[in-house]
Structure formats: structure tokens, C-alpha cells
Length: 142
Image (cartoon, rainbow, N blue to C red; front, side, top):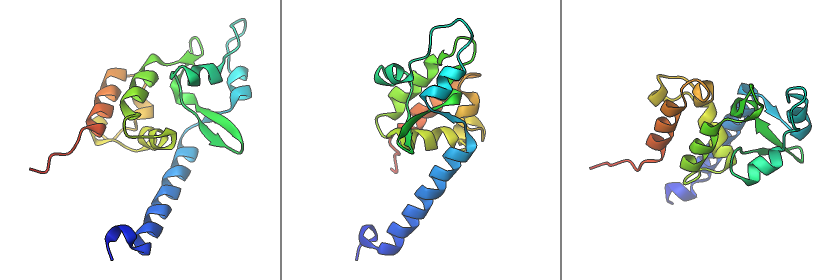
């Protein structure tokens, strides 16, 4: 039996995935479309997170039949997606789906000195993009 077919490994992977998803949901705020609209500055046009998602500016997790968007991906000054979020999404989309991206943003990152990428996205976007590029580079075991 190969490790790939070992049910113990599959169960361990499933448990690890469940813990990672729970960390994502507990670690950051996730807003549905109505909650996104409630955060818009007075007098500004209503946010359209679905259009932003279609344009690749933000990503969402499907929870309880609704899309939820990461609060950390928004610029509070104009309540638009942070441009760096789109840049990081382009990099990560080569290897990650939405849940994988959410886990990456939530996990402590050695390239960021142990900080979570979501914590630095607005503060140091170039560094977060660099960390994203490092995370998708193939590992050379030579």
C-alpha cells in the first residue's frame, strides 16, 4: 500500500484541513454582501463584491449558501479591494483555490518573520507579494 492510499494519512489530511479551515474562520472577519454594504462610507457608491470577485479583485468563501469576503482585503479609506490583494491572488491562483488562499493568508509565514500575510497586506504589500511568490516557487531538492 502506498502512502497515498493509506486511509490513516487521508484521515490525518482531512483533520488538518478541517483545523486550517476553522483557523481561517476564527482568525479573520468574513463579510457577506450585505455586511460589505453596511461598511461602505456614507455617500459612497454601494460596494459590489460580486463584480469585484468576477474581476479578480477579491475572493470569497462559500459559507452557509452565501459568499463571504475577507475584511482584510478591503481598503477602509474608500471601501474598495486593496490592489495588493489582486496581485497576491494572481500569484497564488497558480496553486491555490479560494480556501487555499484563505489558509495562506491566515498561516504564520516565515518569509514575513512569523506574521500572517493578512496582517501585512495593507501595511507592506510588496513584502506580502514577495512571500506569495516564494510560496509558489518549486522546491529544488538537488
